[in-house]
Image 1 (tube, rainbow, N blue to C red):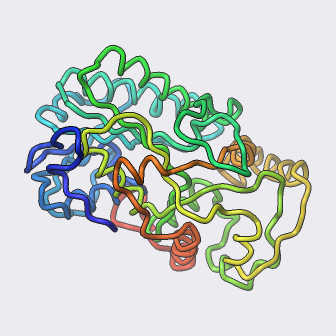
Image 2 (cartoon, helix red, strand yellow):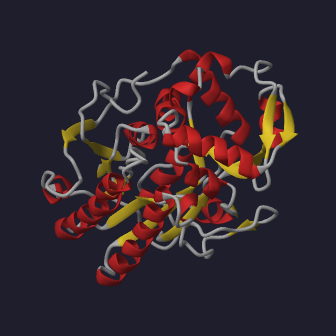
Image 3 (tube, rainbow, N blue to C red):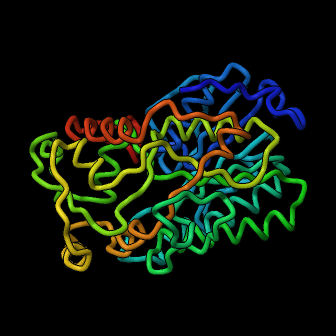
Length: 351
């Protein structure tokens, strides 16, 4: 991963002081572990405080842990944020998709508590994990920049919540102009250690890891609109570290090449793309979801077919960011993790 020190970056002013204190909210999941690892390896970072609902056995250098729930009624976040040079907010709940009020409590009401605590503690910078899922439906034959509307796909709870948090940030920036706000909008994030978690979140028990091996899956559905972007989680973490470092603000798209479609996925799996009707595939997914065979909602399937392709040139030019892995390499590493039942010593990533 490209190393971006936290001090002295950017041409329009200094970054955080040497020996910076960075707080990471949601530090034990797919993105959080990569961000904490990147910060711990940075010599200009003095300390990292990881916040999570359940304390991990993992103990990276310079990192302390505090157990806290960001939902209403949780612990005092402002107390944990006091003296921080930046807060990186990553906490997000994907399940249960059958109870969107539950995910709303964490993802929206919890984010409100984080934002209020950032203001109360006088933290100078907030780096927020948004997503390609916040974007309104868009083109698949060209890329869009960060000015594309962020109204999400209204049927999918994940997209609704990401879009709503974007509106919360609009109001937060107006109310607190002295706080630097950065919104990171990555594509789908993959790494080996997150394979077990993502299998539980999206596929459930219907996806035996040993079958996700080149040559064992005969066909990949070739659906209209099945073209999306991905990147390695460690590459996303490098961009988060740069956003905490540089005196930048606004939104940044993050994606690696190439875009993934049925042809590319079939190449990864030594399979072949087979044209299928969208309605039939969705009907099968919807039936499996209603029967609780798979945890991922068919509404998220609808969203994936409609998400735009993103132009990441702003991240490259402003953050000096360049992904180390291709999207294909990120997916291949994830599939290896599925076969090996990979994980880490944190509750979300437990194998």
